[in-house]
Image 1: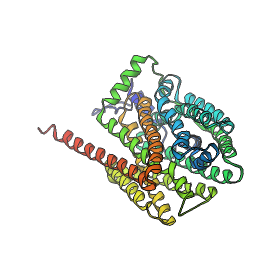
Image 2: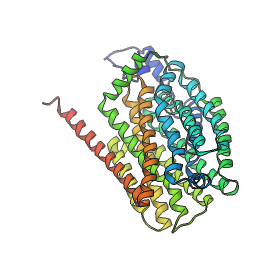
Image 3: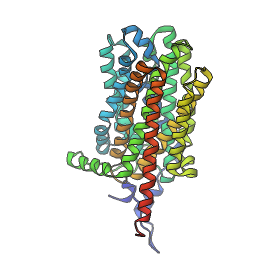
Image 4: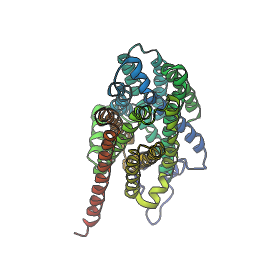
Length: 426
């Protein structure tokens, strides 16, 4: 495989001629260059559609609980089923993208997901709703890993963190707009109409994505042979750095999934008693995530990868502690800090995966996404269970344990890096 397709650096001697690989590398997209804006907008819209669909029921859980007569822990399965389906299918879908191309798999994933999204409003029972959401999550699985692999192949390495940050920013906008729209629509017409509106918005995003995304120029088709794929996965899991990054992504998402699954229940109860529309508007704090994700590249440039992760973990911790206050302004400030810390940490970790993996990038990204959405499923179910048992403090406790895990893993990474540097001297 050439250095272009693997992402490995090209050795340069004292005197060399410009090789075909060098020319291909130079033709990759960069900010301000041809196709970069179209690519950025296309993937931004794909991120909007993905998160709007994936979490379309999260802000509506109190209404779903009321209609079907179930507790928060049961209603939370409408979120956990979607993220669990994505986590389960992201690796097989990434394998398809290695064979049939990133753009083709992303297009098919969005098409199926928006089709299921138009059926969700007609679910006759909680069980059927959970099944539809699981199918929707499985369909969306082709998008995240394929998108990161597309970026790693089509964008120059120096611009990769920024490009992935913009994709993650699209996730934050999708999560925000989906929750805000559903909150206000549901207040007037119920949760079924609200998720139907999200389905229509996702259709528009999917069409625009397909029209805007430039055709890949550096994709090389791989093999669908199970032995080859399993070997690639085994190699990634044998890499200590990738294992740490996967765990960090899962733990950050555990915090985020737990907080935003339960926050609606907390704000509808005492001492707040907020209506559904206002609760939906709370998710405007996702705009903070848009900013923090898009500036992740600068954070890494200034503090290094581990320094940026420490900063993200500290910001998330401060937000969790502030959210314990029985004051709405302090709760909102806490949500702002949690959101900023999460999206910054996610952008740093996911871009590091794309840089670290020199072969089988789709599988490397798929493993990250799988662990990431396992974290979301765990966070939503465990966070809701903790809320049922101990109130908001229980959910915050789950989040704090997850952040401790992030910091511990990052410290272990620092120790491992020092040992690696010291090894040649010994």
